[in-house]
Each structure stands twice: as structure tokens, then as C-alpha cells.
Image (tube, rainbow, N blue to C red; front, top):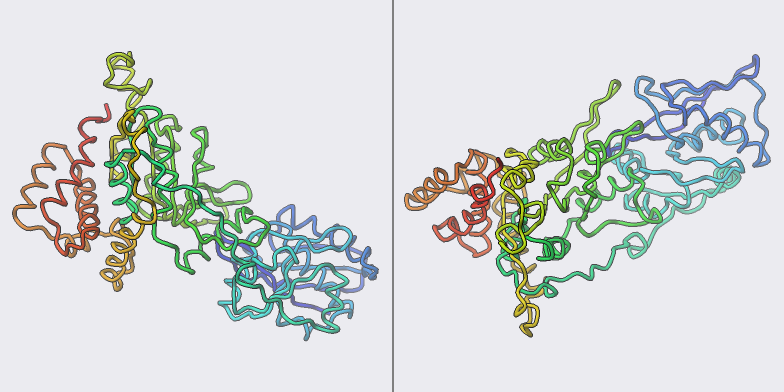
Length: 507
């Protein structure tokens, strides 16, 4: 007899259906798994055999062949334990094929028959539901994660014994309360904590409103990290679709806390400067998303930017333009989403006190070598470059009430809504995503403004990309002020955020 059990696997951050075909026939006892299984899948033979025996069921002493179809795609991980066990139980007559045909099964088995949680349940369930599968049997620990696919029927099963009982007397589908599947960190950061630095706060407001990359250059202790950590508090809220997209990435990476969180706040990732290029982009023997994908729809903060490995920084260039990262392997190519905002911070020189004659003793060669760690092409992809000056004593002791994140966020959301309405037929959400044809359409300049940007282009030695960055950022400044047209005032403000191209030019 041949049984067919639906299961799933992961390609990138999306699931695809795998049919677990099981045949039990007479002959010398054997247990073979085919269909490009990796080592973890091959080891399912011992886990499944022992789990069935320890559940009080007879394991057939016959020739067992399991095929994972499609057979030309590599299968990885222990999540096929449960469907393989179910296929054997169907062939043994313990479970009826017609009762299990409508279900997709996902889960790893312990030797005592307990069904253990696995990574990537959400993308597997979500993709399968979109392809017409409605019923899912998942580990109990993954029930909240699976329930994020709201219309799907989720049946959490504890062990193999309960699985057999379920198909004799089916239970009702599991439904999670909205509060149970939403587990969001309380953000205690607020811009009201930051004294002074009005020019940097303004630059961050522009960056948040248009989703622009930003670089802060300033001495140690000037508040660069403090400001960066507060940037998510002024960004627009995620839509439900964006939350699902981010949660799928974290599910595949195994980073969902207790397998029960819908991520509703924008990610903020801050890797250490010792991180490798592979850890940034993702991949590995069993491919997983890297830091740039974990920052999807959120912020990738690189503190002490010149301290990062040169090859790790250069690898950011393509994802910053394409909003995706592609990992090429011998047998497959995997694409992960990587629509992140780059927020970077650096000192102006090795000691950090460039321009202070009493503190800075760095030579010109040392300064050039330090700044030269950041390539011109990478710097060119950063929309806003702002100087962060040292905090003054009067600012620290001032009793002036600083503007809160909530107040800034209201202006950001207003500007974002203008962009959503403007680009509703163009497939983008933010000004930073404008393509050259759309820039020509939405960033038209009058003759006076053209003269200003021509002067900036010549004096700052801008590239074509830098020219477009100025126009896109000026469009955001105009949106913050509710202006339909980009004026000289908007351009002049944005050009000052590119003046570092000349002052801190890469030698």
C-alpha cells in the first residue's frame, strides 16, 4: 500500500509543498528515504522507528520506502519526522488515508513520540494555505505561530498517540486570541531623552519620513547611538502584511520568542563590527537569513562603521539598491528580502576628536587611512550625511522640554500618508524607492531650483546617484511641509546633508 501525506519545506522565506510518499512491501526489512534528503532527514529513520515503538504501536518489520516529492529539490531538517511516521501508520492501517488526505503535517519527533517544535512553521502554513490547503497539524509549541495564518484550521498535536486518537475522534480547530499571538516589546526609548542635537533630530525625521539611509559623523559621547536607537519610535507603523513578512523571516531564522510572536514593531538590528560578510547576507550549510534580512522593513544600525570588514561593507551595496539579497549555491539559488534602512555612525578620525587641537593628534595619513575604509560607492548610497557635534554643558543642564517621539511621529506619518497616496499606482511606499522615471515625474524643478542643484553638483563632485539622492530627499522635505513642489528652501536644506561628501571625502 502507498500513502501520501502532505508536508512542507522552506525555500528562502517561503514554503513549498512536499508530498511524503510511503510504501510498505514484503521483503527483507529495510527503511529507505529518497528524494534528496540531507543528513537530518536521513536520521528520521531512527527517530520515527523508536517514536512509534515507544508510543505503544507496532513498527512494521518490512521493506519501507519513503519518497519526498518533488525529488529534485534538497530537503533539510527534521520537520519531516511527523509526516513520515504518519505515512507508516496509514500503510499499517492504523490511520485511514481518506481522513488524513486534507491535512498538512509538520513536526519533529522525540524518541518517546512527543512532537517537537520546528522553525519556519509560519511561512510553510501561510504558503500552503494560499495554495489551497486548509487544515494543518503542527506541534503544540508552534500553535500560536501557525495561527497567524488566520483563516487556516490549525490542529496542535502533542504526540503520536494523540495523533492516532485525533483521526478516530477529531477535535475542533485551534483558535488563538489576538493578544496571544501578538507579543510586542515595549519600547522605552524616546527622543525627549536627547538634549540638544536639533539638526540631527531634523535629519532623522527626514530619514524616517522617506526611508532614507543616514550616516552620523561625530566625536565619542555625542549621542550617535542614543539617537539611532530612538529612530524606530518615529517611523510609521507596520501594516499587517509587513508584520507577517517580517515574522516569516524570524520564524525561518528561529528567532521568534516562544514561537508565539507577531512582530508589530520595525526591527532594529545592531551587529558588532566583527561580523562576517556571510553573517550579514545570510546563507550557511542550512541557509538562514542574515542581518540585512532580519532588518527587513526596519533599521540596520552599523556603529563604528569604519571598523567593519571592508568586504562586509561592500556586500551591502547591491541589497541597498535591489532591496533583496541572493545567495547562490551549487544546487539552488535563494533570495531573501532585504528592504532595510541603513543607519550608520562613525568618528571623524581614529581618535574621534578631529578638529579639536587640544585632543586630536591624528596625522593626515592616519585620518585618510581611517576614512578610506569606507568606499566612495557605499558613501554615495547614503542619502543623508549629518555631523553630530559634541554636547554642550548648557544643553545638558537645560530645563527645556525636548520634543517627544510621538510629536515627531505625527509629522512623519502625515508625510508618509502623502507618499502612499501619491504612489498608490506606482508600487512603492517611500520617496527613497523612486526610480529615475518616477523622479522625473514627481521631482520636477523650476529654473531657479535647477541652478541650485547644478551648482551643488559641480562643487560637491556628485555622481548621478548622488544627484538623484538629493532630489528624493528634497521630495521628502517638501512632503513634511505639505508642499506640492520642491522649492529652493527644500533643496538647500538637503544639500547641507551632502556637504560631507567634500569635507570628509574618501582619500
